[in-house]
Length: 95
Image 1: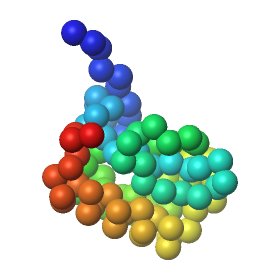
Image 2: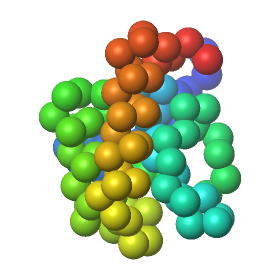
Image 3: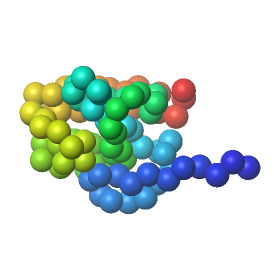
């Protein structure tokens, strides 16, 4: 049995298996976006799919600090919408 990698949610600070979290990435071009594959190039941070943590994605300072970049509310609202639509579709875990 293969050991699953563990990651920490930037909102609640709980360690979970990587597949239980969603990834937000800052691309090498500086764009902030949702990474459904978990494999995109760039600096990433992880958020669990609980409603409390997902709503925290709109917290500009916390995400900006985790991604080591300047972020604006418009970018993070777009990322939040993409993640909630992905989670609500039930595609999480079906890669």
